[in-house]
Length: 205
Image (cartoon, rainbow, N blue to C red; front, side):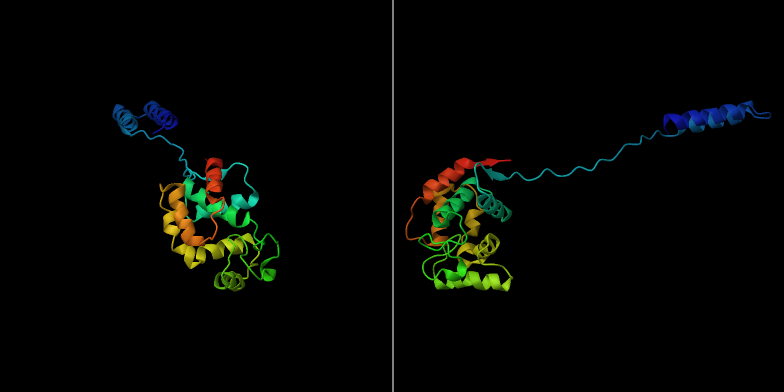
């Protein structure tokens, strides 16, 4: 019973005592009822939202690089070196240009007739056609980042190594082996130096 209710009860008991014919027993009963009642406190209930999971962000990243980084983390890849290795390989392949054809021509999907195309330079006819068929199935433009990222993670080559990306602690050199299995490049190029640059640019928020 809160303070205001206790005062009201005591006033009622006092009034009862002052009325003609009231007995001391009635007053005692009223006072006992007041003092015996358990006190309760009204507390406001607060709903707390869980803290968001920490995320990696990149200093000096382009919008496309930020989108790829976010996409990879949404896939459950959280190791800094794994993320840096994937980003480094994409930079080596395409500079994050989704409409680039091997050799540097920005032809778009339908006009790239030889060599690799797009974000990870799909080169073999099966993988190249697979992008177009996947995009058509889901009513996507094969030139867009969305279509290429979704196709990338649905390819057999990616699915076979994704568990490595999701296993922390391998370091850039360890993840680079998975990158080779995924992409099967002919020239290593600057993949490792790009990966280290991305590693240094990543920070946690």
